[in-house]
Image 1 (spheres, rainbow, N blue to C red):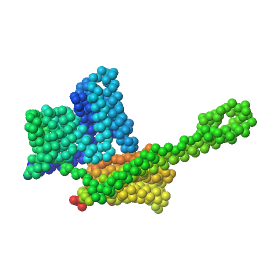
Image 2 (spheres, rainbow, N blue to C red):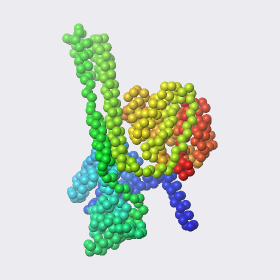
Image 3 (cartoon, rainbow, N blue to C red):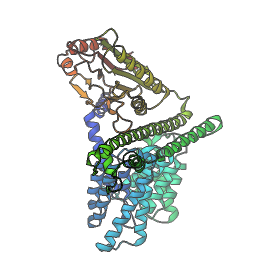
Image 4 (cartoon, rainbow, N blue to C red):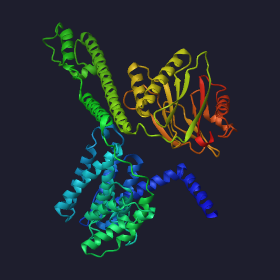
Length: 629
């Protein structure tokens, strides 16, 4: 009993440690760094492959940088001098990922990045061949180019929209890389992955991992056949769970006997992988599109494709160019045709004079300069109108993209509409306000979203009084309708930004949006022009978010910011409007996160809005486990 008690205590301690933000950041950094290192070991025909570059091109930001560093370390370790070309692959892929980042072009043209990556690999191979004396056979060079295109396309698709087939292919590519990694001769990581897939993976994933090991030529036993047999062996109704975990090893031995070869080194790794496979969560079943559900899914996906195609057509449309020569002809008719010196004048009207009328080289500037100024004003008006049309076009195209993604999400959720969700937390929200005038310009609402989500929305109208109150009320109503319908938070905020920009209401409202997950206890805080928020724990108070421009300044350019955090351990999230001095309020705060949210909000408002010249609102958000309700 004492052993079980210590084990449970240790498990809880590990779970608590794993939820620490610092530990999660370090773990994520190690994961990406190690993944790049291991993927650099991939090879075919004893030649390195640019699989790491394929994954790097699917990432962005610091993830791509860490993966690049891991690959640049791994290629010299695994390949020595032959890994110099791999270092170039990784560096070029990292540069490409950082430059492109999360731009819309990655989603609109998912094959563009893989095509560029494969072209760069081809150029690097030719450079090494003709200038550095590389003797890599031409079939291997072609194989590298094709593998770069294939791996980058697979991992890019997995990053944008995961599905079962993409996951199977990604696992197979991972097995191809891990096949060359063995800390000790009898523990090849590729065989460990194959064993895990043979017990806990889908049939295609198990067979593809075996095929990857066969391509890597790490054993003479046909692993594709062994993995195929393992999948059927595990279907036998064993009495013990560990017996099912021996399916890959047993299948390997049977295949080895049938081939008449003796090679026992992969057995320990297959047994270890089988043990890991028994710990994997149950494999999700593929969605079978049958009956009305399947028909509805197909129609939703077709509608999504139509919306995405319409977005592309709108973005391709370009307004007609401004005819500056026509403006100059109009100036010539008004100023030059009736000029007395027109026969002896040698000056030629120039487009530059439209931008600088006083620079006109003319003896009769009294007639010409006013006409040039009038033409310049007309040109500026036409340019402003053209820019406005461009904003309309971008806003309309974005709405088509939002509708496309929304229809796809509905299609994905349709087969799961009858599943029961495990809600583990309940939200406690309390807000306190103090208005400067008779009507409060701040508005805070809390409401349930689709499935397991819960939202807390704080909108601060510009200024005070009825106008600010109306702006915040309209923004809250608009965002709530979108979020309740299932639109993603980032798209909802961008739609509000487009609406404010096209309406000419730049900076009319700022937005603080907290999205809570009642199943995991996680949270995401979206900000657009709002004041910083705070996270209160028993040990410290942490500031999240920074000052940023408000929505409505432009259709393109500025975006919302998002901060991810966890509220599953009793943390308190505090949302504040501009009228509350958060630092002054929390500096003298003696309450703990366990205090009632209403008392906490009132205390913050009292300490932070004594001399405020604006409406002040403090909202306190906390998650409680359902067991304690």
